Amino acid sequence: MPWQLWPHRPEPSPGPHPHPPEPEDLSQPLAGFTVLEAGRRIQAPLTAHLLGLLGAQVIRIEPPGGDPLRGMPPTCGGVSARWLALNRGKTAVEIDIKSAAGRADLGDLVSRADVFVQNWAPGTAERLGLDSGDLCGVNPRLVYAYTSGWAGRLPDAPLGTDFMVQARTGVGDAIRPDGEPATPSLMTLLDVLGGLLGTEAVLAGLLLREREGCGVRVDSSLLGAAELLTEPALARAAAGERFRMPPGFRHPLPTADGWVAAGDDPAPYADKVLELGTAEAVTLLRQEGLRATAVTTALDALPTDPRFATALACDEYGALAVPAPWRFA
Image (cartoon, rainbow, N blue to C red; front, side, top):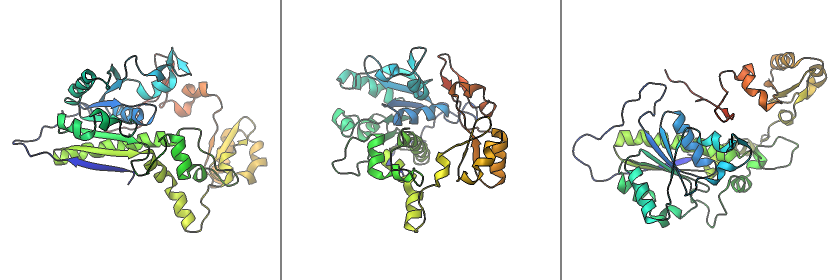
């Protein structure tokens, strides 16, 4: 299991347990829920962002002066495109959690929240009196989510960043195809998967809270994301099978008017594909039983690409905005 849950069961109180308001509509299943997020970089902010796409109100706790990542290049309208991708639509509140007054302000927000998400360095929450036991004492029905690097499972662990966990767990070997050296993904792969697992853990915690009527601590980690990602490769290796993907899927083939990528080895079809248009090449490869798709080479053309007509738009800053990836009816 890539995450863990620990219910906080206080002394039972008389009367029925309060429930959050009913969703305004089925397309917003977390409408009426409030999420507090005190996160940095990608993992915790992505967890809260996805909860926001499900309808929750997300209040982001930032240090005095605001999140310095707001200015990280590249920017759109003067705001970091990366920051917008993770924090668009959130309400930002500046709080100095190192001060007693700031912690009191945070406690006031916690008392009225459903979820608290953080990815502080190990020991920070305990040192500041903001661990799950502290905040669940303020709000006994709180779902407290810690999205960490190593989940406390590695003695004397190094800094729990994406690339450090990739290096330690062999992700760079598992994700590379045959014939390539083991190197980490330049995309922060574990941060993204860790954010998804954090969301999954919070949703499981909310479900347990509604069933048990008590607060819950949920822990997810980059280490758990790495284990989930490498599990299929490890299983293939244990069975004596080739654990890496075929080499072809990392090497797109040129077509008469573009490029095509295949999930399997397309080398035997290279000469034939070169004579075809991209759409015809994709059709041919699929008819031959290969997984194939056209390669997009112009990122600025994505919003007008008919394949993404319902998936991408631009916000008021000019940055790409991805709508909720699910539908409820």
